[in-house]
Each structure stands twice: as structure tokens, then as C-alpha cells.
Length: 355
Ligand SMILES: Cc1ncc(C[n+]2csc(CCOP(=O)(O)OP(=O)(O)O)c2C)c(N)n1
Ligand SMILES: [Mg+2]
Image (cartoon, rainbow, N blue to C red; front, side, top):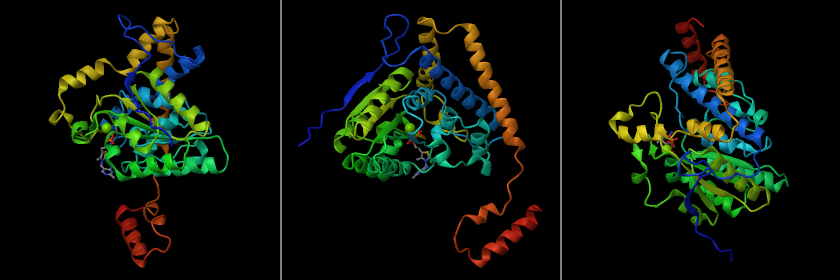
């Protein structure tokens, strides 16, 4: 009988504080890899900050801010090979940028334009999942399929702390464990599910403890430390490829921004906690690390940030240049055998909109 060991509960860290806590060595990432991670963090941060501005300007719709969670996204994504599949939630809406997706595509998604949808096989990236946790069984199924076909690829599902209370999370995790599916279950524990705090979500001391219930290994990392996330996910990927099944990774962070642009967290979050989280945010910490190891200076930082800002300027221009979608799309893909009322409803809509 397999013995289930307790999950690794101490927060794993690589990046120190530049003072009393030293940086730890991380194996298997060369200088180029360290800078590639930085470019990805900057691109994600720039996308996020510009999106909040675009929302305020009325150029995109409601937007789920991920400010401060870039280390979880980039650290994990860089641990995967291109053949591996990513299943994002709305919190990782821009993860496709790290797989070469144009910013205009993601911006179009938030504009509700069909140009914002892609063929998942083009990027090995599933659709952005808005229902909480429903993509976890999809990811488990895809991973199991890869195993059945004898392929080496694995899948990674991103989800939040709130998702661990959902049935589909349990079903997906258990199924993957039983079938030894090559899956990484990556929980961004940011402490909140909109206004519901973690303390109202679970009686578990740490979310990573849930791993034992599925008989799989679990590890808990500092979600503001891109190198710690990267290291933990790399290990999980190695297990998956070796046929050892899924791993649960709890990345501990804190939601330092509103849940989405439609939320007012001052009604429920202690502003001091938010300030603390903002002071400990992942991009600044990584910049400190890169400067300490001599890989980053002002000129390079400006060059990388300038390129990301330019990519966003071009992205919003391209998204706004998309011709408006035909309103018929609202009905076209809803049902195989549409009822007759669809035709008259669409005719009414065309008349009202003059489209
Ligand atoms: C099945 C389902 N129930 C409820 C919602 C409404 N909802 C949207 S976001 C959210 C909170 C999710 O919190 P968490 O899983 O911690 O992810 P986070 O937003 O913190 O990234 C809820 C309940 C939903 N989208 N789907
Ligand atoms: Mg959460």
C-alpha cells in the first residue's frame, strides 16, 4: 500500500530580502532563463496595469485584476514545455502572452469580441474558465488522455483558494490521482474569494494538506517568489513526466488589488494588509534579486519595460481596429436545432441595432 506522506507545509522560498535573509541557489535556470522570467513578469504586470486604465477609459469591460500574482503565473508557465497544456481561470487571463499570443487577442476577450477566442490547440492553452473550478476535471481528463496515448506532455490547472471548496476541484483532483494523470494542480491561495476570506472557506490549517486526501504529494511555496514557484512546478512536472501522477502546489499570495474592476474591497479588507502585500509584491522582489546577482541594471529594466508598454499600445490599437462582430453570433452557436423564435429574435435585434 502506498504511504501518503504529509505535504511539505513550510513556505518554500528562494529569494531573500537583500538584508538578513540570503538568496538561495536555484538549479537548472541559467542567466538567460532568469532574464526570460523577468521579461514575462514585466509583460504580465504591464498588461494588468494597462488593463485597469483601459477599463476606466471604457475600452475594455469588467476586468479581473491579477496585480501581484504574476510570479505564480510566470514561474509556473516557464516550468512547462510548449507541448504541455495550461488551463487558466479568469485570474490568469493573459497567460497566453507567455505562449506568444498577441495582447490584442486577450484584450478582445475582455472587450467581449469574438477575436478574443482562440483555438486551444494553437497554444496548448484552454479557454479562460470563469465558472470556479470547472476546468479542473477538464485538465485531469486531458492529462489522462496524454498518459493513455503514451505522450510525455502534462497539464497544469490554475485555480484559487475558493475553488478548493467546489465539487469539480475534488472530482478533478481525485480522478487525476486515481488515474495517475500527469497534472499539476496549482492553487493561488490569495486569501480571498471575492469577499469571502480563507478562514470562512476551510477548516484545513493549510490548503496543501488536502493533497494527502487524494494520496498525492503537496508543496507550499511563497507565491511572491517567482523562483520558488518555478522550482516547485518544475519538480511537479518532472514527477508528471515520470508517470508518478499529479502534484498539488499551494502558492501563497495575498490579493493586493480588488477582485475585479467592479469590486470595492475597502468594504471588507484591512487596508494595512493590502499595503503590506503591495510592499512585498513579486516584481520588485525579483528585480532586487536580479540586481544582487548582477543581471539587471537601469538600462535593461527600462528597455524591457519599454518593450512591454509598446506591445500593449499596439495591442489595444489592434483590438479596437477589429470590426464590430455580427450580432447573429449571439444565436449562431447556442443550439444545434435553434427554435423558430431565434430567427425572429435576431431579426428584432438587427432592426433595433440597425445591424
Ligand atoms: C461556479 C461558480 N460559482 C460562483 C462564481 C462567482 N465567483 C466569481 S469569482 C469567485 C471567487 C473565487 O475565488 P477564488 O477561487 O479564491 O479565486 P480568486 O478570484 O481569488 O482568484 C466567485 C465565487 C463563479 N464564477 N462560478
Ligand atoms: Mg482567492
